[in-house]
Image (tube, rainbow, N blue to C red; front, side, top):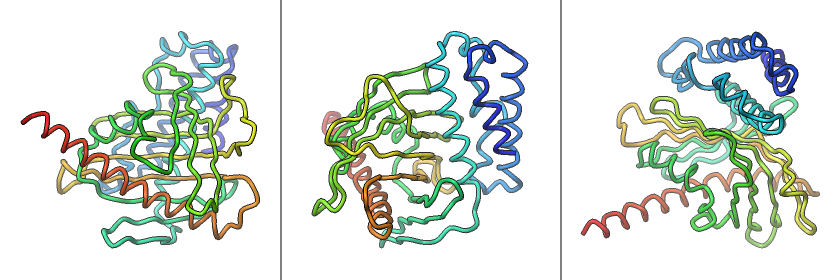
Length: 285
């Protein structure tokens, strides 16, 4: 079902097919059907938070406002979200890479046509709305608090949910892995109390490959933030990561770097959110 769904979605990014209302409706129906299948039975599965009426559908009137390039980015972002949801919905076959003392966990899985993907699972002492604001609305500030990131710049915004970004990563300690840059399309969704931020590599005329910088590739990637069942003021934070760092790097080094990067990210994000709370309290005094 998935390959057929992707082909149908990709088809409506072309202008002559985008004007075919029936095809757009069929594509959306196929996505909804696939999401329902992925949700499966059982209220404990996080994927069940994805409702038929909302997650990936765009209003037809909005679609007709986009030009061909913009529509292509929208569909790339939605496809990244679709693929990521499918991967995260599969509970079997994950191998534990890291379990930190605080309970943070990184798992991995090898997938056909994608390779090895990593999944961070943590609980954060923040509400999903606050984390969404930091990671999406303040995305360009990430380099201020995450030492693994030098810069994030938004190259283009399309509607409310889609953007194209340029990110530059810092070198790892000892320069085992040098700086990399990425051009990504990102799809941000808020549905009920659950927030999503998905992405994958793309190309953009404002950011061709830079001399002396390795252009890496990512995707599908996705961050999912939902309130903890036992405490809605805490967030179950899941981050699916798929990266191709390029260059001649042994897989053992890549695997170690990527899994540790996820653990480090969770800690840096905790510190950032704690500092935000401290500043708010200081202003209130």
